Image (cartoon, rainbow, N blue to C red):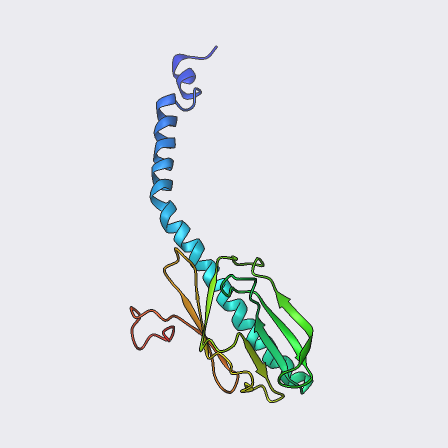
Amino acid sequence: MLTLEAKKSALGFSLIELIIAIAIVGLVSAIAMPSYATWIKNSRVRTAAESIQNGLQIARAEAVKRNSFIEFQLVKVSSKPLNSEWKISSCTSATSCLTTLQSRKASEGSSAEIIVNASPSASNKIVFNNLGSVSANPIPFSQLDISLSGADRPLRVTLGVGGNTRLCDPSASLAVSDPRRC
């Protein structure tokens, strides 16, 4: 037969202890939720920026490998602004591109709400020549600003004349010596 002390130790949690534990978990969750949502949006911006940067690097490498013109194009879906959707095409000349080699939809790993602004806004295309440098026809963009509503860290993909790409943070709050700064 169990003694009174053995019965008390076998009972488990009281209802009050359980309610207090649930209240603490709820309070911590309510405090952490806004910063978690911002972190998720910043992660989507980074994913989209890295995808575009990788697409540019793939197109440049294909141009050198195939010894021909390769086009990287940000795909514009209807009247919406540019997002992280892109395709890489093989070209017979700097202006005639037909065969799609690789593509990425905006829904693959990032968000369709991502906004990409090309600067200058002359074209949403880049054509790499057989040396891996940027062809001047059509006039290429030199940088892409990638952002998302609610995210506090927009990113920028810059493109050099030689075809090299760089992912950086355009924020003025970063120190001048910070390597992440544009």
